[in-house]
Length: 185
Image 1 (cartoon, rainbow, N blue to C red):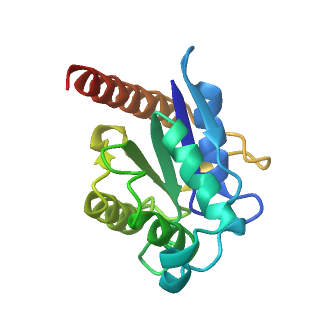
Image 2 (image 1 turned 30 degrees about the vertical axis):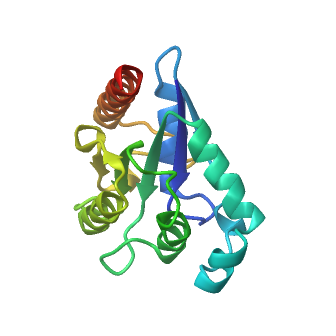
């Protein structure tokens, strides 16, 4: 099973990226979690361009999403919402069909004790609007990240590791269900 992981942060040393790396390391045998690294290459959404020619970086991301069985998005929370860079990517994807019925799990991570719940809720709403198959059971919040990662951004918190395993299991089950539904259609 192939899962594409997208970090909603381009910050050097991003905890979102660290969480996705931990997910990749904790994934079960037979499941590969690939962290997408091209967010900085996505240009600012322009509907005039989108109507005429999709930029190469956007087309590349769309191909990666299509080739994946499911998507994991980890978001930070900026001003109680989804970071602009992540929203920009979703703006490019909304007019395509790449996320329609695609199993997607959401994680949010924050230095605060709330774990980015407002951005998490906003992202789930956006993904539902895009007709993604949001795996609510696979979605997690990670609060107080300074207590859960070491200085090298290595996940050290056992409870968070267990939450990641539950999250990955939920998206794997959602992918299996989606594949069975497609096979029987």
